[in-house]
Length: 84
Image 1 (cartoon, rainbow, N blue to C red):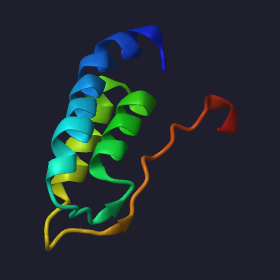
Image 2 (image 1 turned 180 degrees about the vertical axis):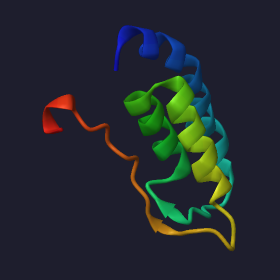
Image 3 (image 1 turned 90 degrees about the vertical axis):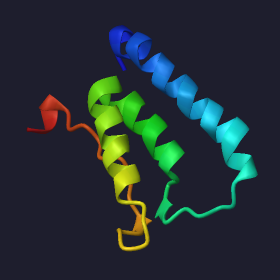
Image 4 (image 1 turned 90 degrees about the horizontal axis):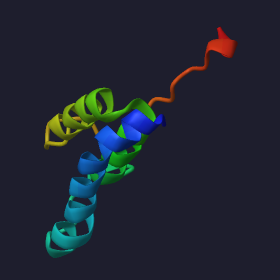
């Protein structure tokens, strides 16, 4: 994660942390995916930056409904240029 991504992603990570530690404990567990949406969102923002990672998190939350997907759904890893 570059310094710019870290600085721009910090507000997103703080909001995710507030949800994870202050709101989520008071709601019943209803996760359809592993890892949870909050863990997915924080990992996506760290891996891909605030814009792309945030969009990935929004799409993931959009899939979390009774007719949506379920199961293992990890954050895609960036491929390094040396692998190409």
